Image (tube, rainbow, N blue to C red; front, side, top):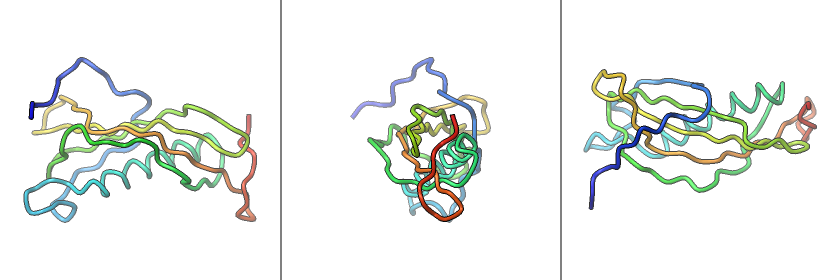
Length: 131
């Protein structure tokens, strides 16, 4: 196994959420659970989608998520979002998770995925996304 490949890549999209990872979200080795990271990404993607849809959205799919680097206790998890596609009642949001480690400003990408959301009206049924 080789170490992570470092690049000059910058995060794609807007910084949507930041949170400090805590021991309660980790296994005994100090690695943050993947489900926790995915949940933080879904929260950020939902914020992005709801702002664009100007209302309530629900997650309907997550596409091709894989972890590049582990997230550790004490990392600052930064989630970036960008609307990729707008359909009639749905939106696809590209979501990237990066960490700031060891109290530095250096960022490392840990995972990315495409999240799909559907806009819902007050009646709980799909509603068109405003153009």
